[in-house]
Image 1 (spheres, one colour):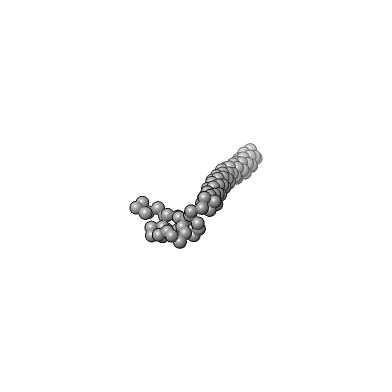
Image 2: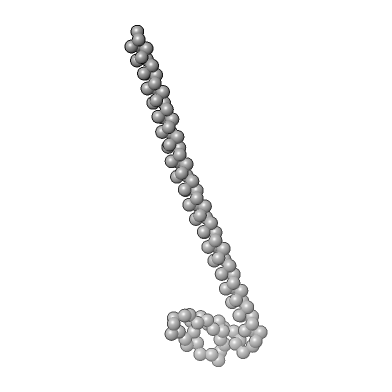
Length: 109
């Protein structure tokens, strides 16, 4: 209680619930009862930990694949722009060459 950590306790009718955050009614005197509850809580903790770990890995891989996909799109768009610019430059150069040839032909006439 001093550290603010919630307290979970297995209690029966002869226990004082003061200072207990989460009360679990049950027979706290029988070993079988205590084993049953502790096994249940331990299994729940393990399942929760495993689920959280799996979710974390799934998020990490999906974030990575999303980043990879967006990076790939960005790089491809830059290359496509470069290719478009090169094609446009080639077309302009071809047109300029044709104009120069026409001018030279006209000059010779």
